[in-house]
Amino acid sequence: MKQLIDPFGRPIEYVRLSVTDRCDLRCNYCIPKGFRDFEEPEDWLTFAEIERVIGAFGRLGVTRIRLTGGEPLVRKDLPGLAARLAALPGIDDLSLSTNATHLDKHAVALRASGVSRINASLDSLRTDRFKDITQGKLDKVLAGLMAAKAAGFSPVKINMVVMAGVNDDEVEDMVDFCIEHDFTLRFIETMPMGTTGLSASEHYVSLQLVRKRLEKRFDLIPGVMPGGGPARYVRVAGTELRIGFITPISQHFCETCNRVRLSVDGTIYLCLGQDDKLELRPLLRAGATDQDIEQAILTAIARKPERHEFGDKPEQIVRFMSMTGG
Image (cartoon, rainbow, N blue to C red):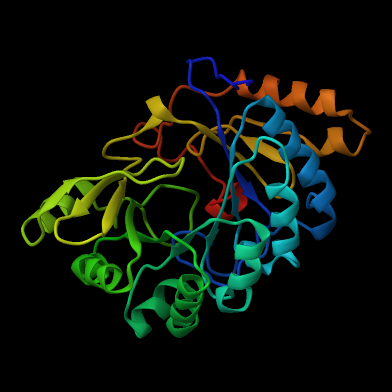
């Protein structure tokens, strides 16, 4: 079996695939208020182009694909695309990141298409606060989460970006919520991605401190979870709850990075915290062969940097998270 290896000896086995940069929410750490500079649909990769690129990644040794956005479920017929990707040789793990606002309508079809795992954003359990953070409705998200659970997705992972003075007082409540509903919980540190109106430095919370807080109430023991992501897990003793900590700032995980991102316009981003990239769309639309696509991917991976520089150069990345792919 082939392996895709970067210059620092890390196997690249995981692609985060953005199928749209658009979203029906406006989370204040992701998209700035009033932002309208989205990619035009004619610049999006078509489903056939996506299938070709992911097929090339699969032939080179990638086994995990995560569908992301923006909000992936605003892309028409996403379950159809998922079924095409799940059938590709080499791809044995297909998952989805979503804000869950449309999940109640699509959960059953996604499960049937080959999506096996769901990650859902949920930054507050308070209706008014959720609206302040996202401009959306909490009840739609909760309905989506319950639909995913009923459709048989396991695990359903809840992603909470912990922000000082915004929602950091809900950490324990979120643990209780996930124990009650048999969800997995992942806390995420804020990252300086563009200028969104919410200051990452002002609202930054080290998850090392969050973990110490939780240890005062819960007995946390080492735990593991399947998946290709960067979270470090513990389990709450006496329950099945796993809690993951994603710490790009306080305890970066660059030495084990196994992923790249493919944006909706066909750009391979090699690091969330660097601007190294390679554009595939011009190749695809100029009649590139499958071998040409594979060679372009190999060229890109050869440029993957060793680490991000969020701590050293927080001003370096000016694109927004929705542009890169969650």
